[in-house]
Image 1 (cartoon, helix red, strand yellow):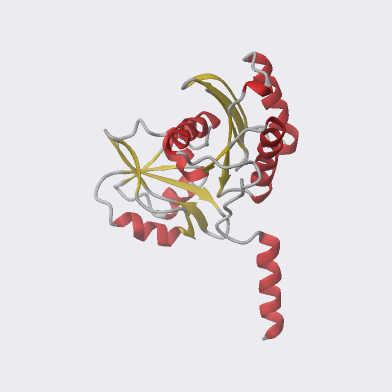
Image 2 (cartoon, one colour; image 1 turned 90 degrees about the vertical axis):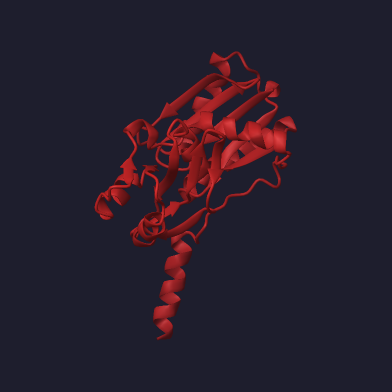
Length: 235
């Protein structure tokens, strides 16, 4: 089985191809260009470098959120277009689960934290044991202060990953039970998207290209500002 995985949920972009469970190739770019400039070029280059024809792909996988609203739309639109053209199913993967999976060598609690601005983060908590990665709570958008209270109840060391990890670590005062992951674990990777998609194939959790949709967790900034303006004008 060939799985093409794509991530455009934050500043970096990456794509990967997994062939029968093995990583055939992966591209990762974090150079400040918009995903509309980088996503499809790296996908096309990866297909060429791995001698994979678009029709050889059995499943198209992509992060569906949370993350950058624009980035998510670009990645999901790209995958929907390819999957529809090839008549193949899709796997929509949680960005936070991808971050946790990327740090699966760590034994204990893993807390992905993506910067959601306004002192908030997109987050979830996972526990990684010898039996594998287990989700403790669902994806949510909360304040860093609220996250600190949630993590205070965990007895084991907690590894912070994601582009909001350093901000959380500094804001919460570097408590003893929190660990900040090294730089290479702060970004989500398409290879982890593909690994999770493999499990979704086994569990029968694939969707059609038409049903693939983003999971934003909160309203886009423009909509939030419109509602805030309407509320202020009503006062």
